[in-house]
Length: 464
Ligand SMILES: Nc1ncnc2c1ncn2[C@@H]1O[C@H](COP(=O)(O)OP(=O)(O)OP(=O)(O)O)[C@@H](O)[C@H]1O
Figure 1: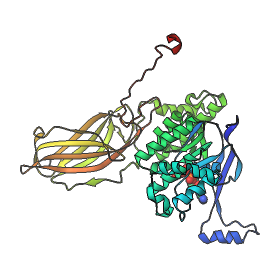
Figure 2 (figure 1 turned 90 degrees about the vertical axis):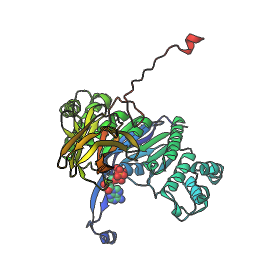
Figure 3 (figure 1 turned 180 degrees about the horizontal axis):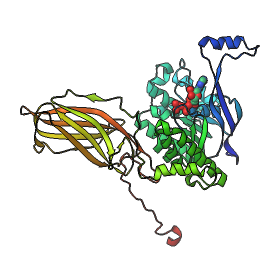
Figure 4 (figure 1 turned 120 degrees about the vertical axis):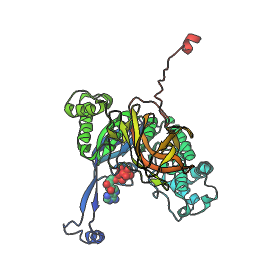
């Protein structure tokens, strides 16, 4: 089924889009075709990108917003043409691109399944044969007979995915689409993607999720500003991507240059980018490593502020300045897994209170309570805090979280006029991110840095 050549060859591909300053300039441009005046500026979304994907490989594509990931996938699918360069694709491509592409909103789900199946290279009888399997996978019930414009985004993705995976693609292209479905459906999709992968298909996979890229992909590519910055093992690429993503604005350029030089150096020496060897760009590579190895990888990112902060009515106290510090007192909000930190806040008392206790909670992005702690249980709090006092609370914690974003609560309880109340309470008062660490093998949100060991005790030969 598969030839020995690559499934995808991308050679020096660039893509520029015309950008019109005013909407009517587009029309003027069409009318002015004959004279040479240009009514638009060009925006380069991809710049001289080259790489190949062998048959059977799952390649992850990561990059910041606007880095050119979707444009690249669209060029591979043939829904966009490159401005320069060459793309060769060997095999039947099924693509799950962004919502809104692929289906005709006025047609029913059933009609769209047929339409899509045929577009993807099946004949009508083949679609008929597979229709039940598609409907069963999509689980959208009677909606199959209703126009797609009446679907929720989740239903849309279910149907699109069901079609894409049931046409037996040689090349499956998935652009972040899965993040729309619910968790259970996402798990079902990943299980199916794994099966497609095991059957020998080639997969191109765009995701912002570091763990998904590491778990699913054989290799990964890092795009930035339309350029291919690096290609290599998923762990290596994801760590570079996160470095770029979480770096302060004034460091982005130097980190970007360092990643590029490291990658160039690796290609000059022929080494994998996991272990960039000496070569040109050595200095910049060393810079990248220095920032990694100075023991303080954690840093503060200005814009990392929750948008979901909620404060209950305060009764006599004010929680102030909640933040995280390293043990040496540096204020940080991008943390390194495995290191110890302190969650700190102060409480200003406007009224006197008894039995005072403070609490904290860490939650996931979906709101799941992960870990929490109180300074003491009810009845064992600070016996008396006078009005006007300022207290400081420190919660030292090991960062046992996998890479991702987390949210913090803060609350003070106590008795005023003999009544037990929350004196002040904040939900999502601060947030932090955890940087992915190469070498950590946790598959869950809490990462206890379990050290696995695997060994062969006897082979089947020894048995027989
Ligand atoms: N049709 C278009 N006309 C003009 N500019 C475009 C067009 N399509 C994409 N772009 C620009 O090209 C750049 C790359 O876009 P693309 O959608 O490929 O990025 P991306 O990496 O997929 O981003 P995201 O992670 O936000 O989805 C962006 O700056 C985008 O604004």
